[in-house]
Length: 196
Image 1 (cartoon, rainbow, N blue to C red):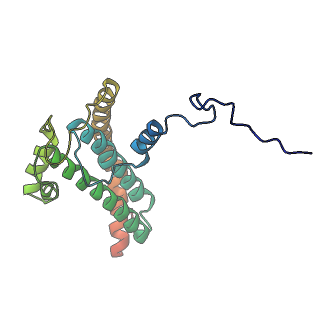
Image 2 (cartoon, rainbow, N blue to C red):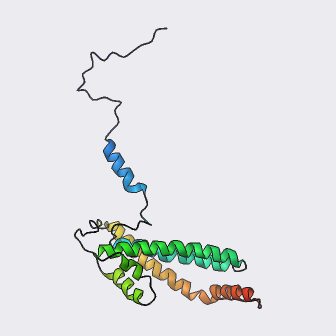
Image 3 (cartoon, rainbow, N blue to C red):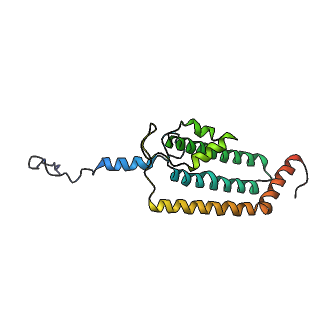
């Protein structure tokens, strides 16, 4: 059987090729927009609303929940408890430093203020300022401002803030019932005392 070859002499070059891919630039820009999570990104800026959205969920709720489960569930395995808790605290600390450094850039401050916010006494005041002051609405030497959150994003942020407050209140109210006996078992077991 003979081979059939396409003939290009009669095809108009101006005609669109049906096998040509679409607008690849649009696809590439869209893919790079969501391809890298910027959770641990230490560069750029982050707006106040995005800071609270990430901070409430990833620095407060998830690590607190994990630590409570670790303390209650691993109270008789001290080494595993310490390793799991250290892992959660290291990731939470890195995320918090990343968010605070980007917040300081959003205010036009040096990123070192994000590190200073982690110090015990002076850091409390700096963290308070970074957590409540709105960022600059114009570009500064650290880059352009973030786009504002959409209406559903703002509603979700408010809902998340309220849910975080309710969650931490409920957790605090149940501390004596569940968490304190577990912590007591950890320390009495570690020190060789009697367990309750």
